[in-house]
Length: 238
Image 1 (cartoon, helix red, strand yellow):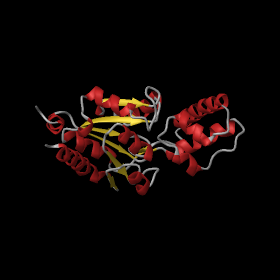
Image 2 (spheres, helix red, strand yellow):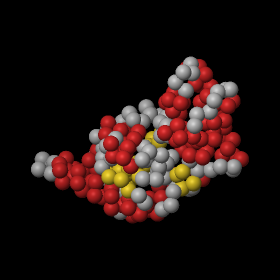
Image 3 (tube, one colour):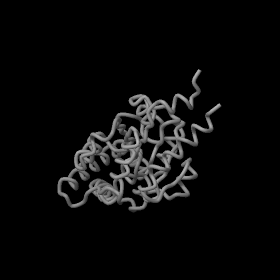
Image 4 (cartoon, one colour):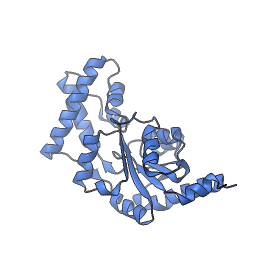
């Protein structure tokens, strides 16, 4: 009977990416939209640093952390104001998400090496599709998981669904993200995680949350994910 390591080697290798803070820098739009949402409700906007800390969570969970003393009904109104403000900023073109240097080249390199690519993001389907359309990325990803179709991070559901849709095994899957929420989601799904050093949580925090390694540039991504998978397969070999 084949070992799990043998099955993983024969099956697809899946690299699942977070979006905000990992592939694209969205912090300016997120901070501006959140500030506008709070202002629309006559609430004191949270500091920008606090807002960046919750990037990656579902919108409801993020607002819950930023406004713990606001009742549920008003939090739902904050969500609506945030969505409207974000859409208005994107439409006006005053601010926009920008890809991090080397992001698309790294995706190309992984695809050429035979990796299947996926997304697991705290964004909504609408928000994710807007980015994919803007940068012509939709065809690159075999699976797209969002927080409005799954429980949000750090629940393991997005990663589990990505593996189901692609046929990948946990030991042949790597989660790539910039926050502790990404690392915790991977740990909960029993998937190794790779942290990126340019996002919204620091390297020490990523390592404490379970990252197997940290990279400082996208050029380091292909060998890093290969090393993580080979290490996992080697440990599982009889």
